[in-house]
Image (cartoon, rainbow, N blue to C red):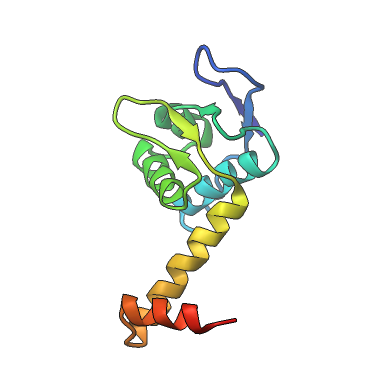
Length: 129
């Protein structure tokens, strides 16, 4: 594992990441996202903490900056982090919330694939016990 320094002025320990495995069939951006999820899950980064910038993560993980940015967008969409141009990357959620959001998105995709509209899916959910 390689340590990544937190941004200057941020509290807490350094984050430790394993380099991505290029032999693994899992896409690189998903491996990067998994490493960050693991760090959050293991308490290396908690809610409100800042995490290193994409370029620093890319250097440590041995991947392109765009690969890290893609992973960060995935984590943002899961509700785990908040990021924006020129702003710090902050942990905003926890792994459980991220899992619920990911499964909800999967349910929506599944329902759309089977011809259900959003309002029909919501109606189905209200009818469940």
